[in-house]
Length: 457
Image (cartoon, rainbow, N blue to C red; front, side, top):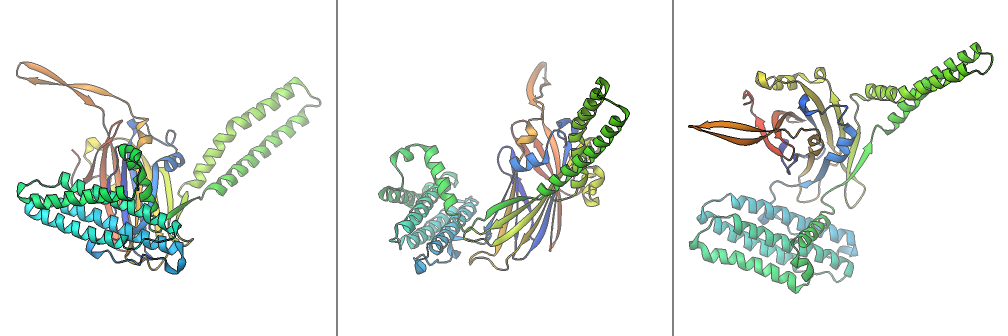
């Protein structure tokens, strides 16, 4: 069964990703149980603002079994003079090398014994060198196509060097394998020298670590063309919001006009009392108009989707997959029974009053076959919790302990715990998990998966 995987991303963010097959549909539900002492509720955290500023979605072709020996040979040529076709084939080849290299380097770093690590690393050098030579075998004569090649070649050479330097830095050390280590160092030097000979990067850029890193990030995005999909977000509430605003305004105006006409019939001429009455009526209209609109909007909008993401191919307008998204503050009675059941597994002292927020994404893959070399689409959501931090209290204190006859003290920070229930429903079944997010004002300290039947500390 395809599973949704949740992991920490950066200091204040976490990500969820899962894979989909052609024509597959699924639904991701996240239920946030936020303690009331965090001060986060529908009055302080607007769902629309939170979605626009703190939730990112990403979709791209994906192959879990992509390793260097399995990277298929691509026809890198000026096929029929079509620049788009050349660029797409080039990017597919380079992107596959990048993903495969990252995957194999990660697997090699799992080998803790030098007897296993260094032969595997040497084999990795041989495979990578062969693929890079295959890429560089053909350099297109067209200047436009040549720029595509140079950008991809520059990035791939730099990324390869970084990957093997990481391998050297984090792998096991042993003097018995000095020859194998020398092979890795020589390969890194060879790629560095190659970029120098091709004058891919100026000396000013090379001398500034931030500058070269940011340049390579830009080149990495360029080779994602054709592999990572373009996203178009549609606000599904725009016309409904206008309709609600118009109806509320119409009802209030009708009521006001009714009162005004009655007032005019009771006053035969314009007096100070009439002017004061009309002023009070229009003042009340302006006072309650916004509140009534918000009340009516929340009532009508509850349970309705708010956005739709369409992911299109970079080389055409074909919609590869789509997402329909809900995000709203909910009441306890709106929780599904299985979510209530898993939340009840907490110990009694952890069952504190909480506000609830629900995120839902219904996903659908629209096409029946993918590009060669790919058998799945990966979708990823990144949630940034920075909007939560602004409401947290700094709160620090001292912890006193007695060590013999001596009293010592340590500074402690205030931490908050958010319970997050993940429910992922696909054609293969339902995945239901509870996570405990521990955070302070500067970071998510820990994300723990609470196993079924396991109570909180």
